[in-house]
Each structure stands twice: as structure tokens, then as C-alpha cells.
Image (cartoon, rainbow, N blue to C red):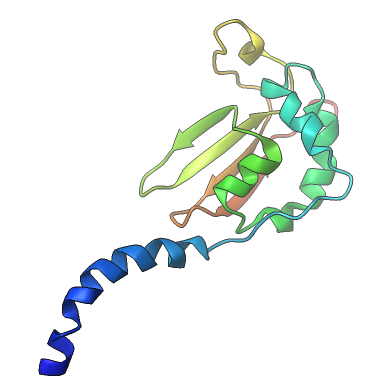
Length: 137
């Protein structure tokens, strides 16, 4: 017991330093997705240029690669979300519009148009990928 008490002060500062490293190991980086033009997706903020709908099929085909990806890696691939929804217990949802709509106006108001939604669990990794159906498809 005396032996362990000598090392107790070290654990007080060591645990806070080690915890971020342990949590950073959760998830994985996103590899390149074949046929997906990430720069074009990122350039089409709020889908106001009407390009995202055409870029969606290769992204959905690679849906399994998105699971367990970290939020920073999703942002690097798709750009910042058009809308972010914060849920209970550090869960969140990134929404990306797929077609031009009311969100393209000067006030960037919320629109009910089709969106790609990525749900992040408490560990900050993708747990669900949903895409609203596009009209005419």
C-alpha cells in the first residue's frame, strides 16, 4: 500500500494528459472515395450551385467507409456542415443540402429540401448516414 501511495500524485496529472490520446484513437480517417469530387462538393455550399445531387451517388455507394469516421475527417472531406444539430450527450448531426432552395436566400433560412445527414455518436464518430430522396429519382 505504501508503494502505490508514492505514485499517486503522478497519476493525478498523467490521466488528464493520457485521456485525449486514448479518445483520439476512436474512429478512423476517411480515405479517398472513388468517383466522388470532394472539392466540387465543398465548393457548392448550401447546394446553391446545384452540383451536390449529381455528386451524391458515389458518396452513398461508399457509405460503409463513412461509418466510424471522426467529425474532423468528415469536415475535411465534405466541408463544414450547412446545418449542425446538437443532441443530448454530445451527439450531433451534420446536415448538407442536396438541392437549391430557401437556404440560398440572403438570410440562409432553414429549408425542408433533401439533405444528407450524418449522425455522430457520443465518441464523435459517424453512427448513421441518411440521404433524403431526390425528386425524380
